[in-house]
Image 1 (tube, rainbow, N blue to C red):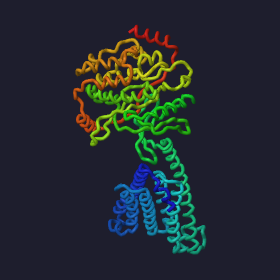
Image 2 (image 1 turned 90 degrees about the horizontal axis):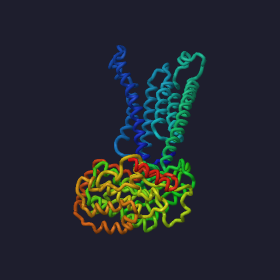
Image 3 (image 1 turned 30 degrees about the horizontal axis):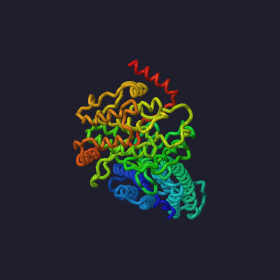
Image 4 (image 1 turned 90 degrees about the vertical axis):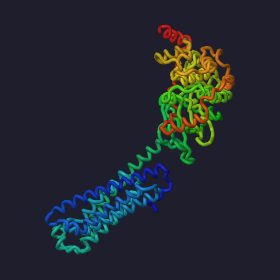
Length: 551
């Protein structure tokens, strides 16, 4: 049972990996033996002293075939169906020990002058070393299997030379002198044990190193109770990975926040922001499950995994969206902001990459839904002002979606700054273009501050209701006082707009069935938000204004 001690603790991914690697080991060793057997058959068949009759009558040929079949049987077992880790370990052990037994039978039919003991060691040492390379195994398991195989080899060596006539042995090894058959057999077995012990030590040491490296890689991919599976996306603040909880098995998205160049105070700020976000509870805001940091300082937080597509990817892949679909998305997005603003939290990074669209249940009758993601730049209006780092002002956000005041007076933003982002998101969804796209990032920010947004109707392909366009352009006003007074006021206006029934649940369901089957990829939590330490607002405004006037 020592060989199988931890088999039942394997995760599904570890079990599948073990089954694949044991199968590969069986295929490689069995294939090599089969290839060597084929060469023997061809060479002996062409030899006039043997011929086909000699090949068929040679017992070593049949034992050689059985050796190959033992290893190939392990491969066939792992190839067919899904098996438990315990079953895979048994298949590996039986294949290895069975192949060893067949190989000893080959040696038993080998002439003594060919040193069958050395034939065994040379034939099976590569097998054990190949297992070390292919099969994920602890050093303890490798050692136990090595001992089991070694017992077979040493016992066979002793038996093979037990009845050797001393005169023949003396002819092979003149220095050995007169010895009894038992002494000869013991000497051969002892020498075989020494050679095999060296092989076992090398294999066990290699297993210890390789197994340790595999565990190190696995541990590096685990953050707290969350095991990373693959990357979903990457942005300026870090990367987001698909993961699962080690115990609950629920799918999770884990965001890793880069801390390489961040101070300890910034780490505390990130932790506080996650705590602030975790207190939000709304169907259109991503749920935060947990947070923490690794021993090497990587900060992470776990959130619900959403199998959908960001608004950014939606427009990039499928172009501008129907007005009714955009309106339904905005109703949910603004509803999320009503809740967040009610808790005193300003998102400060509203953009298409931070809004995930998904269909909850294809057969449950629910409509298309969206989730607001990534509160990494959140501002808590209820917090004390001393919480912000005291090193000048900080511009936070994504240039294409930043409100004018978030650039000029980032410390003074309120909920109306998020409404500017909502207007920019709607503009992008309807037109397929950012409000301002020409120039560098600094020039784009300058345009947000000083240049009126181009009328939406001049960029959209299909006509949109005038009241809807007016509401969106109102969100993009430079002066916050000219925008809707609050997220709640914007939501009420959106709900009061006439519905043209251009996008209903049936249409959404058909769209998702078609496009999910074509490999939509989730990009939860992507984005290129950034933070810039700036000088006082007057100097920044003058610099950006000069850039704009020079256009």
